[in-house]
Length: 559
Ligand SMILES: NC(=O)c1ccc[n+]([C@@H]2O[C@H](COP(=O)([O-])OP(=O)(O)OC[C@H]3O[C@@H](n4cnc5c(N)ncnc54)[C@H](O)[C@@H]3O)[C@@H](O)[C@H]2O)c1
Ligand SMILES: O=C(O)C[C@H](O)C(=O)O
Ligand SMILES: [Mn+2]
Image 1: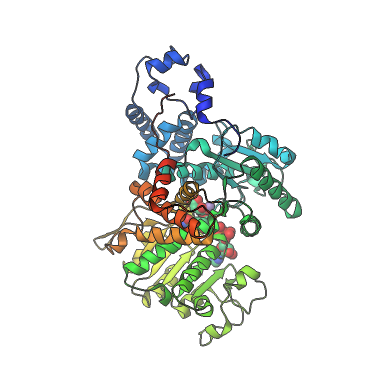
Image 2: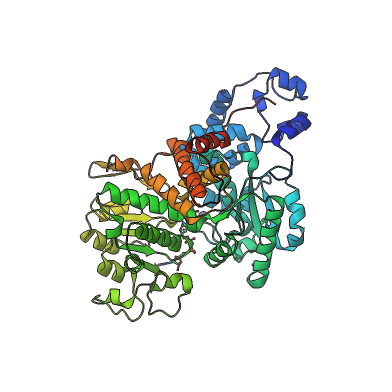
């Protein structure tokens, strides 16, 4: 691959405190007697030698001592910075309990409080005043990097502009690349592009660690992004570059501009589309229905909403609907109501999802102006309702009751994160639909008991897709990321749905088998990359072998 020293070379160089302080090499109390002598560690560690299992038990005890989630997050982040092997082993063993702490929803709070809970650096910050030093900054990373997650912090979950605090997201996403997709943590790099913030609270906060200016936008912004992409291509030409939590307009423009230029994708647009398509397909199949029969209402027409609709539409085309038939199935709503061709404020992308006036004929409301969410649900009678607005409570009781009155199995996905931004809670949805709703949420929710039945709530989060996407891309050495690779991922996820075998089970597999699910999605992604001719040909056995070789396991290696 590219230049830069490997972990093995570091291991030969580092001794004593430098070795203990490198989280990629540190074993703490698990360094053997021989390693302690060889690497100048005698006396720097207490005499007892632990196994990794014993270290996991001690760390779990410490984790449990913390009473609140942000303290648990700080503890786990510190452990990550001290000893990555132990961190990932602990996470793997307690994945259902700890994933919400290192990822959504607690990572949202960690971004908001980033400057206050800051301990030590991870990844790189590229600020606007340092834009001409990008090459030098990337050269400061001395390892080979295979996956980068980058944000500019402007749309962090549903929490808006967090400026430099947005760094929590690339760190959290890359933890999942390793935890769920087996990407070697030494080969991951979180990046925060600091072009300022328009969050006045952050600007007024004396502790704020970011560049204390309002956001750079327009031509200067685009030039900065271009400089960044060129620097990445030069330093890490084969890297997978994931864009995360950019404002919608920037997200779409950047993806369009660079998707054929390097191996790259936007997770909020494409990863979200794939997880939602896979989960909706599972919900429909489990209920004995067909995707092509559904009317779909999407509340929110940003990165996530548009991405989901375009992929579902593609799935309908593949199932035999014509372009016009498929388009007519979607009722997409933004802040100003239903997207329809009578609106003069729609850009080209949104026009692709605008309803034609003929389809609105016979509606019981005025269809010449703004058409509200309630009007749409009453008239379109959707089987599927998805929320990607970042607006707490946007699914109201009245609208959900209306939907349930004409639909036996209303599929309802409040996808906004974090938990506090969900369009509705599963508990309310079950109450308002008398237990009929088939639910998946963006953030994790506990199971809900309704009328003696326990409903397990699937977490329809792009975390089911992007780590496996990374694994499939690295294993196949794919050079580009195509829409067909995301479609393959969606179908592989659907196949893994427990609800296909038992309609009362969760729509998505348990986190405890996430690495196995990741493997099967990665296999499908690799095959799709080969079919699209963006990766060299491999047999199914070779793909499997590459996947196994690529998957990093949290075990101590001998130094
Ligand atoms: N579950 C997941 O995997 C996942 C993935 C991506 C995004 N999300 C969540 O989805 C939300 C939106 O993300 P995004 O990237 O699309 O953001 P965005 O800012 O690009 O889009 C938000 C959209 O919601 C619309 N909107 C806002 N208020 C509305 C209202 N009251 N009624 C109708 N429409 C309204 C806006 O007009 C805009 O179209 C965030 O909360 C994010 O956390 C979840
Ligand atoms: O980060 C998440 O939990 C999912 C998604 O990428 C989001 O922006 O909400
Ligand atoms: Mn995101």
